[in-house]
Picture 1 (cartoon, rainbow, N blue to C red):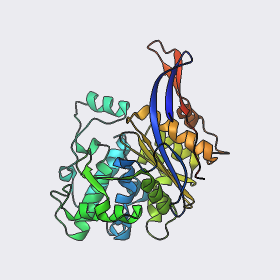
Picture 2 (cartoon, helix red, strand yellow):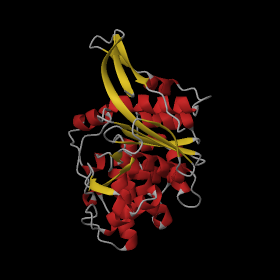
Picture 3 (cartoon, rainbow, N blue to C red):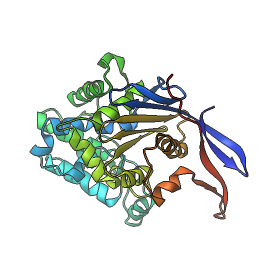
Length: 327
């Protein structure tokens, strides 16, 4: 079984089955693990494509959005002060405030930020939601087009109809071929074969014109796309301008080359987030993509230690699969 293994005292204690699709610049499958055609929800890995209308419809110019704010529109952020401030700024530039957000609240993902909020006597609001940047961007899109801001999360709202069309464009599927659900933050979530998500990242990496701004913003500001201690931040900082990547819930992660030469997508079948960075780095290592990239922060995600309550290392989490190449 192709998996990520949790090992204790040399014995496999648990395993997370992994599916991988790697494609070339035109979307042809070049390597895989498990079922590359498995239907998966993209979850937050769709965010870079959901931000494309901001640059193509000149919303960024109209509201003078910065590259930092554009990066936050692609983010599953930690809710740290920098993230919160940028989300508020996007809303303010569109003439709105936090009350317009319909993503719902949750505590900041960053423990220090959550503790600081608690010490200050505050409570989590929608601005702390890891999707608040995406939602702020969607609201800016609605304002720019003169669409209603209320109910922008609903499937029949012009914002969400535009998102479905955008995903069809980048996955090279008809809109009726894309499965639709509701994401954790209330907006439409998209389901396609895993290989189509990989192809979308290859296309976005190789795109010319305004969409290239999305890739540039993500590469320039990996911390804003994720946050302190996050795998996405470590990968973005290590890869620099070579790669861009985006996490999704339930064990999804996708990576594209900024020259469009490849795209890859990973799905951990049981949704185990601890296995996702291990699987992604194993794929990139086997492809040779990370050759010459040295990063201590990245190496901690490659074979993370399992520790006990005494702080002792009692095991490791490691990849146990090899990429298969088509005949």
